[in-house]
Image (cartoon, rainbow, N blue to C red):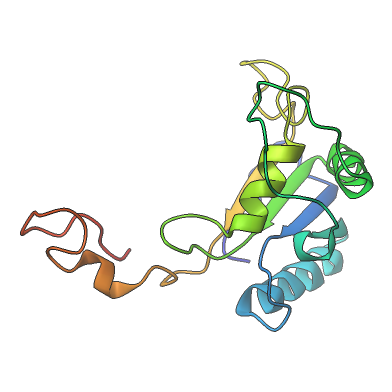
Length: 159
């Protein structure tokens, strides 16, 4: 499905963590996640979901990385769920050229040294990742001259 799993991978992932970062359960992203899970399970893969909107945590990185903040139980559980997987699939919309704030807060608070990165050579600690962002989720008018900066040329265009 939309190239999220590459059949030419030498060792296709067997344990997939499907991470849904959309806050609305009636969104296209939830339908996309359900379709992905159906296809992957039919292919014999173990797929388990992590829905960010269902977690109880503060997305605010109050002190940056200067001072450690204790992680809420849902974030500790999420770390374990992510460690279980050998492939992460990220499904979320692109709003204002970025991910939803709750997902950004989840990443800031959860992905600390050791998860998912261990060192420069292993990058994601041996775990592969696939983002799935529906096309057209960035507004057309943002590329209109004058919206971003004072240039007469568009700076952001639709893909």
